[in-house]
Image (cartoon, rainbow, N blue to C red; front, side):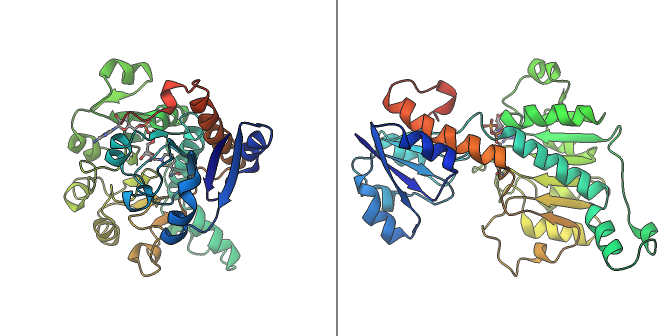
Length: 318
Ligand SMILES: NC(=O)c1ccc[n+]([C@@H]2O[C@H](COP(=O)([O-])OP(=O)(O)OC[C@H]3O[C@@H](n4cnc5c(N)ncnc54)[C@H](O)[C@@H]3O)[C@@H](O)[C@H]2O)c1
């Protein structure tokens, strides 16, 4: 019998799988303070993990732990070196969430380009036609988007963009020209030349030492005045202070952010008051369909791991 710790609740569809499997028992851990995790986690063979940070100071108490199953695909809330040194496997929900994120990007692109929130508040405030001409809106037709990071999400997003007759450039040093062209995109070798001509920039790469602050004021200054940036990847890839400056000084037109340097975002973060930014609370994967898929995949990954049936694409190479 394997013991699984469900750190933070997940959709009931995954839990139902465990309820039917006699080889596993589980406990849901809702109190994620460091003290409680140190107290509760040592009994588990596997844990599921949402956004809670599981760093060595907690993991060093978990001598039985063999596998961490991320409810999602990013893993900047765990210490990879510690997992490798201690032979703890790391699994991700590789096929569950890309569509939901790509749709969220399209929602942000469309909302910002079409002035949706401004139009909505005009109508609600009794200004049906007054001031309408002051709202600047754009079409997507023939506009250029730079998709930065061409993995699971980038490859699904490109289809949506091409469906709107956009021109798609792709910046991803690890994906070859032929692959990008087979999806209908054009490979850009250097991010500077990609962002210079882009009407839209959408970020889809991991946060690491190389990508932290990748989009800073220097780069923002080279962008078009009508440019819109969307970040659904990780906070920290765009420098938030620089982004606020660029928006307030008309250097770029707008930004859509699902992720932030600090989450939850501080209420005194200037981006909260910035009307040129569309915000969401790291919720790109919160559709009904996606939360169910992620929960199922998180649990199936653990079961498959212990039954030696785990699929390669679900395992993070440490
Ligand atoms: N907002 C959300 O809820 C949410 C949900 C899922 C994923 N994400 C985040 O979205 C991002 C992409 O997810 P994915 O599933 O497509 O990941 P993925 O691993 O499939 O793709 C990432 C791509 O980024 C590329 N890359 C790595 N370093 C790069 C660099 N320096 N410059 C350009 N490209 C680089 C890789 O080659 C890879 O093709 C991740 O940061 C992930 O954490 C966020």
